[in-house]
Image (cartoon, rainbow, N blue to C red; front, top):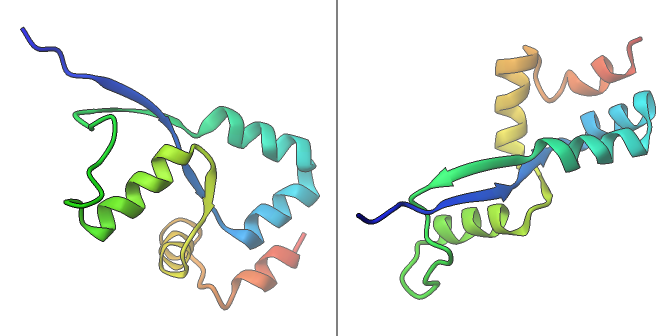
Length: 101
């Protein structure tokens, strides 16, 4: 019986403005510790490496993000979607919201 390999990976995104505010509120060390402890996830069915000759550009970017193991700056589209769906604000409103107490 063939068993499926389970990979433990580490990846995540950060939003510059929110990350900067968190650093001011809780300190650099707490933010670093948060990223070190909370970016792990497991995945089944992924290869141990990808064939860069045969893989799509999107697959290459995704593999790069999850194989590096470090948080990555969120794209403008990802940031905008996060802010709208989770925070219920737009990117234009973000600076004002972050300066409020």
